[in-house]
Structures are given as C-alpha cells and as structure tokens.
Length: 162
Image (cartoon, rainbow, N blue to C red; front, side, top):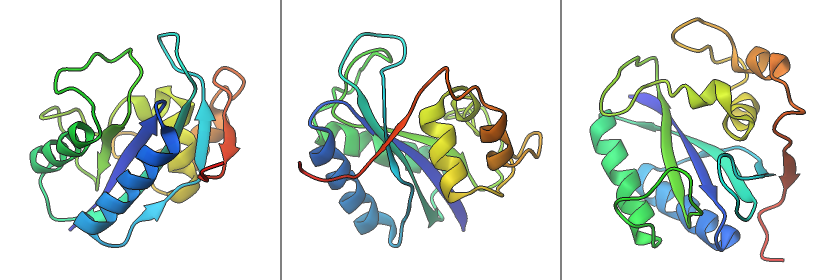
C-alpha cells in the first residue's frame, strides 16, 4: 500500500467538477485526505482562474493503473483524450507522488511540478508538511517556505456553489 498524491484542478465550472472529482475518488479509493482549495491564475496561457487542491489516499494500484483511472475521470468530465497542456480544462488530475516511488514511466514521479508550481506545492505542504521529497529528502513545508510565494499568488477559497 502506498500513499498517492493527486493534484486536482479546474477552471471550467470549477466547483461542480472538483466536487464530483472528490466524490469519485472517494468512491474508488476510500478515505481521502483533502487539502484546502486555492484559486490561482493559469500558468502558460490566458484563461479563467483555476481552483486547485491536492488529494491523498492509500492505494495498491501501480502508477500506470492509477494514471489511466485519472484520465478516465478527466474524460468523464468532458476533457478530450488528447489535450494540450496550456488550455482551459474542466478537470485536471495529475498523479504527483506515489509513496517513495521514483520513476520515469508512465509519468515522472515525483513530478517536478511539485517544486515549480505554488498550486501544487502549497496544498502538498498543507496535507503532508513533513513528508520528504524522495529524491533530495527536503520536507514539503521547507520547500514551501523557500518558494517565492509572490511569483505565483494563491488565494484560499471555500468549495461552495456561491
């Protein structure tokens, strides 16, 4: 059993898609650890602001199975199978870490984006502050403290329909 960390984001019907993603991940994987939700500007393109969070859960699935399941959930929420990285999206689910696994395929784990983007690093630091990056052993809370937080501002929001 390994703890999976999944970055969840949406900038189209944000509340609806994030609530459904939480429900579906709970149904599939059981108890979830859910970070606060943050609003952030899109990175790399012009578009509506995103709501982002990180969800953690324990699983015995291998990375390939887990990534395929996440892509199935994305498609169920209207995301095309072949999607560009720099476009608006109904639902974006990225496996960013799986236990202590370090690998290159089917995705690089841990994802380098964990250190690069506030919308992943801050929620990780919220729910797993003392977890250490499996490659250099730096705790997520320490990575967040060193992060230039003015470069990618986040606003904490409640996931409500209003």
